[in-house]
Amino acid sequence: MPQENFNDLVAFITVAKEGSFTRAAVKLGVSQSALSQTVRGLEERLGLRLLTRTTRSVSPTVAGERLLRTAGPRFEEIQAELKSLSEMRDRPAGTVRINAGEHPAISVLAPALEKFLPENPDVNVEIIIDYGLTDIVAERYDAGVRLGEQVAKDMIAVRISPEIRMAVVGARSYFHSHAWPETPQDLTAHNCINMRLPTTGIFAWEFEKDDHELRVRVDGQLVFNNIGMRREAALRGLGLAYIPEDQVASHVEKGELVRVLEDWCPLFPGYHLYYPNRRHASPAFTVVVEALRYRG
Image (cartoon, rainbow, N blue to C red; front, side, top):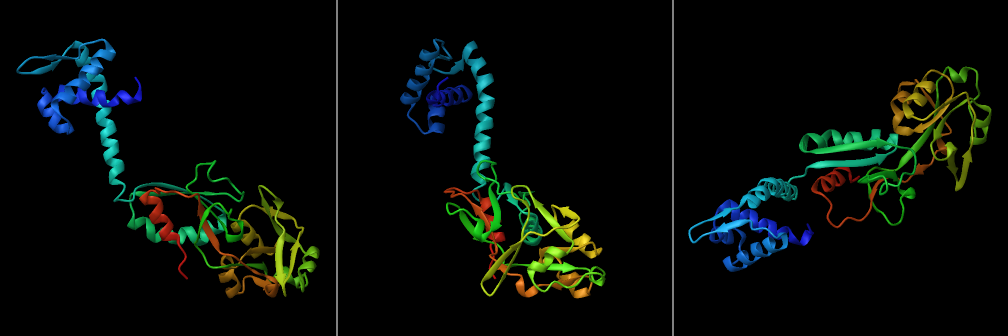
């Protein structure tokens, strides 16, 4: 049945349930004559009489009973769902899907959600770890997380972290048999723990000093695609690792790891939550964005 006839069905269902054109007209907020004409139009299109009308009552025919039995519950479900959606305007609820790299998920999203989720029990957050430059629109994510310099210009970006610094670290046992690197180029003579990215292959270590930028491709016996295993390998003395500063700070402080080339490790723009323009963002998405917004 064409979509424009759904109002006719609503009119019929209301009259059949109320057993009166007068009461149904009041409930629907229309005139009795307009309601009668609407129902009559539905009957003419179907070629069936749906209601038996007398001076005292209105009751469904056999065809009307069948239509009421099949269509009535469906319209009740639709009305209940519309009411539920309406309530979402005032109460954040639903699932927010975020695509992010491992480091921002660990260092930014997890701490923020630790406080946010207990305060918003009806909001669910799904975080997918992904080092690739995923198209969040095509993959149906609500938002993604990237460094500020990587966010596309047509996206809305909200900063969610301070600037990020990397660190080159190794265990003291490693340096018992290896000299400290004085410059990034010296790393080519070291056993370095590499990271593989899904889109660009082995990640080149990035350095900067006195406006001089370097990208050094290092070699080593180990390659991982996550922070935890690179850090663990460095702690075991298996090589040098290039890791976000905050992920090794406590180990450096305890003397378990030694930091080198610190003056060559630049600051990168902080992480940003990015998403396409939405005129009617859900309350759940709105409160998640505010919970993650960086205010430092």
